[in-house]
Length: 284
Image (cartoon, rainbow, N blue to C red):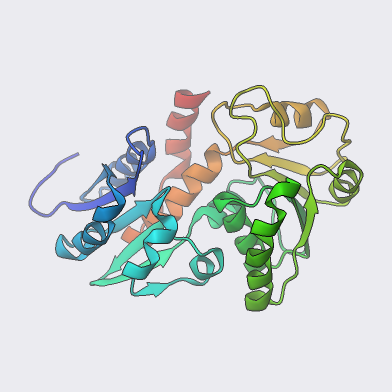
């Protein structure tokens, strides 16, 4: 990579962020597309967020990515929001459009791009969890014309999640069905009629636990996805594959949400296949 007076910066902003693999992905992409750019990781305090966003304009940056805890906090400092960012209530990509800062959320798009030969339009989805990643998948599915969504969360989180789903219904006219994860017969019933089952919780990162009981039977053609990619195969994915179902981990979501951001910044397509190769070698 050649750095000179014309090099434009992009960065990922979060706390903590030093472990991020986004610099690896984006710098590979800059190099492969002969784009004069460099991508770095900025670990900042909340009190520096406004100044950090102002620096996107000041230094004529491509823009920034955001991770926890700044995806929601960044919104007041932006000029515009895309449809999906407004629905999700969170931004993971800021684009500097000649000094106008536009907030996008590429997580949901990245997730659906990562599913091999699957489109959510007109399909039914069962989603486990209602955190940030779940919201982005939920909102994107609605924008893409999903026919029905069942969300399962622990009963203690019910009251916290309802207002978000009510607001979503107000904005889109789409009613999401909400259930308690502990209600196994209903979970079985909904999974049995779904085309896609997604774990959007962090359960399984310990390589031990699974968000659903092993007694659940999967219908033959359901696609199973986990947003976790470390471990590469969670107990949830192992369980799905043992029933003969296709199963996908979260590494593709990470790559394709980055590819969406890269395209928004540069107008170029990220060479995802080439980068995917390096990623799987790194994480498998």
